[in-house]
Length: 370
Image (cartoon, rainbow, N blue to C red; front, side, top):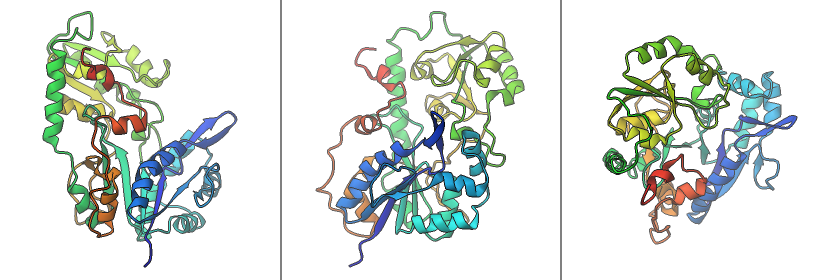
């Protein structure tokens, strides 16, 4: 019997400055994903290894020589170079051959894989599952969205989709709780308040796939000014990881009558006076719609979420899943085998939040008394 092979990976191209050199920005993501997917898949009979720019991993982990890939493209190994590389329509022949050999498997499962790599694997006939954090982060646990280039895999994903109604109910509970909390600001909010959100410079969501350039709020200064003039009150919440002198913060400081806030984003969304939320393409825009707010997207979203797999598409929509993908029976089902449901983690809140070591401010609203 031939044992199927599964490779765990991520954005193998993304660099991170470390002193005078660059290292992988996502080696932790790949190790994290292997801990969840790799363990569950091994228990269901897959042979699993990783493929990443992570020289510290021993064999049989597959080492991807990312600096050599940048050299073959003739692109500098920098954050700006990363943006330029991801905007390329294809890889040089030697890079394409190297990557196809490295990812020769029955299934490749990656975290936030770039389109350049997804297209290459799809053309090579390799089945792919791309995993990303779903924007709705205020449920009992964080949710991940999965998409695939295989309709049969997409059908399995749909069996474990999180219902939108569940998200609406949880948003309702947060609005209910906020009614008992102190207001998010000392000054009263006015009906028709607009909240503008900053994002981290260099975030992949901000990358213009055609130009390789990272968008910023400065590109939409005229639209922002018009929005501010037509709002009863405007709040700006900068991203906590954005530098004080970022271009986004600079343009917002030049617009008058804007109140800068650091209030919890869910506390703001729960306020009935807030009617509109605006950002480039922040995940919070998806959440804002669940709170009944008008969401203004200045730039296209990074992912398309839904349940469809169009006939002319190479990949189906990203489907928000329950934690089923963390258990062996999910990976058995992808092999066409009957799941062994006796081998599964007992459901509990915050399991994946703990594994990801992040909560995006949800814990401050999730206290019994906040």
